[in-house]
Every structure is written in structure tokens, then in C-alpha cells.
Length: 468
Image (tube, rainbow, N blue to C red; front, side, top):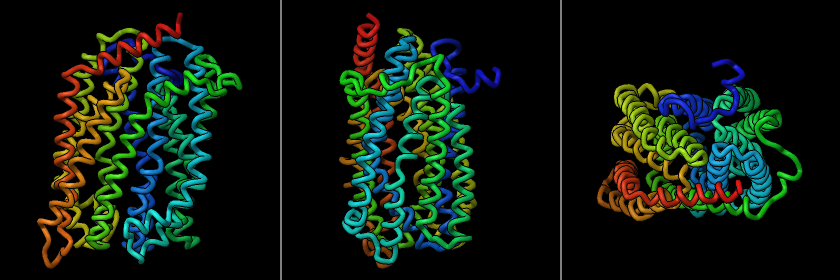
């Protein structure tokens, strides 16, 4: 494969499924890992140059970020599915309109979040009982991020469009460049300029803006695939409605998960700063450990979407066998790494031995869950690519709202002791493991029942109607 072909749109409706999926998933995995480096770099820098309280501050900000960004995540999911289906159908006009409307919707969303985000930051942190020792740091960190959220939104949307057309290498290259810049600015702003926690937030905003510019430049040079002009940028009710309709269940899913994280974060905060810092470390490592699952889930979504668009639905089952085997294999490897080398991974974030030991014990509880999440992500990716975003939404709501929150608080209540008067930290991670296992079981049942096939038929009918 030549260099030009490597960084171009790819047709996933031809060739061996495992090859097409791996060609997409591997750069997607590297890109997701680079994306995770944004937050991880923040944590490593503040943990080493400022201290454990600053580390806790950055971690406490994450659930609020996830809550307020949930709408956009859903929007980008709907965009990626629409783009992949139109690309698979070889429908240039509808592909152009979809991409143009995605960009316009992103601009509107950015303006809304820039206005709302800074206003609700402090009240939300107070509502969550964020410790007084870190609340000012959390507030400044979040406000800077929201004011500069355009880079984050546009990078994720534009890179999602590229991936919907099978080009995961371009987004990877731009993100790697921006990640290196982010790490350099983190160290410069914190270690050199003594800007503290706000410095890492500013570094992230700048790096994300640059990666978005690179993605936009790439799309502007893909005129052989689609058209981008004022006509395609103009919102069209049918197209915008389709993107939002497909993406809304994902937005609700992300919102529900974020609300659950906020409620659990309140429990985490009540357990003290050491447990908060431990949670930050584990979630940063978890971010990397979950990347193969997320990457294969996204790959299966694009693979399914393109083949639905092309009417080659018979390739989906074979894609599941081959893609699923790769995903489970990666997850098993990650689990082994976490079990045997977790101590060394956590030592990157802090030199406090007691904190490292606590993180190791908690991660041992979670480790098996990554294999279960591989199953959930692959099956969920197929259902979303076929147009069924509702089923994964309901599964997420069941596991996060009906299970995670009551189980976490129930276990915390039952494990109260003199050292942990509000409950032991094990409650946080045992509840998460139970939810991951349940999610895999429910996803398997939902896939077998086949409601997603009805949604797939609806998607094919819609695409055929556009071509008439």
C-alpha cells in the first residue's frame, strides 16, 4: 500500500474483513491512545510538579467535562454513521451534504457550550462536594477548557468524518503531532511558567485547536470524494434530522453515563483525597486499557455502515467473527499486562507508595472486565453501524443507572470501617466490574435477537430513496 493510498479514504466493502478492520482499527487505536495522552499528560505533569492534590483536581474535573460534552459525542456518532453509509453507497451528493451539515452543527454546538460551560462549572463542583482544597483548581481548569472547546469539538467531528470514509491514518498523524505539542506545552506552562493546573488546561486547548486545523486542511483537499461549499454547509432539515436522530441515543447514553459518573464521583469525594487521587490514576490507565475495545468498536461501526450502504450485509457476520476475535485477543493481552505490571504503570503518576499499592489492588478487581468490554464494544459497533443506536443506549442505561449507582453506594455502606467511615474504595470498582460483565451479557442477547437487522433494513431503504 503506497503512502498516498495509506492517507486516503478506504472502501471497507471489499477484501478480507479482518484486513479491512485491522487497517482501520490499528491507526484508530494509536489515535485513541494519543487522544488519551492529552489527559494523561495533564495528570503526570501536575502529579510530579505540583502534587497529589493537583492530581485529584484534574481528575475531579473529568465527570463534568464528560457530562457537558455528551451532546456533542452523540452528534459526532450520528455523523460518522451517516458518512460511512453514504460513502459505502457511493452517493457523492448526499455524502457532501452530510459532511457540510456536520460542520455547521459542530459550529452551533461549540457556541452553545462556550456560553453555558463556564457558567455552570462552579455550581456543579459545589453540588458534588468537591473538597475546598481543590475546588479552585478544578474551576479554573474547566473554565479554560470550555472557553476553548472549539478545537476539541471540531477535531473530533472532522476526524470522525475522515474515519467514516475509512481514513484513520490522517487523523492519527495529526493527533500524534498535536499530542507531542500538548506534552511540551504542559511542561513549559507548569514547570517553567508556574501556571499550575490552569496551565495544563491551556496546553490541551491549544493542541486540540491545531489538530482540528490539520483535519480541516485534509478535508479541503479531498474534492475528488465530496464537495464542500456554502451550499453543502447550509443546514438541510432532512439531513440534520437524520444525523441527530441517529446520534441522539448515543448522546443520551453518554449523558446517562456522565450523570452516573457524577453521582459516583460524589461518593469518591466522600472517601477522601487519597481515594480521589487513586481513582484518577486508575481512570488514566483505564483510558489506555479501554482503547483497543473502543477502537475495534468504532472500526466495526464504520465497517458495518459502509457495507450496509453498499448492500453487502452478508459481510457483517464474517466481520463479527474476525473483528471480534482480534478485539478479545487484544483485551486479553491488556488484562495480563495490568495484572503483572500494574505497579510500574501507576508509579508513572506518583511516588507515593501507599497510593500506588491502593491503585494496584483496585485494578486487580477491574482487570477481567476489559475482556467483557471487548464483547460489548464490538457488538455495539455493529448495531450502531446498522443504524440501531437505541439498543446500546438501553443497555448503557440499565448498567449505569439501574446497577452501577445503587451497587456502588450499597457496597460502600456495607464496607464502612474506622479507616473508611464512608465505605471502602473497593465498592467503586466492584460495582464497575459487575456492570461491565452485565453489559457483555445483555449485548450478546440483543445481538442474537436481531432487532438491529430491522434498523439495517430501514437504513438501506432510506439510502435507496435518496438515490432515486
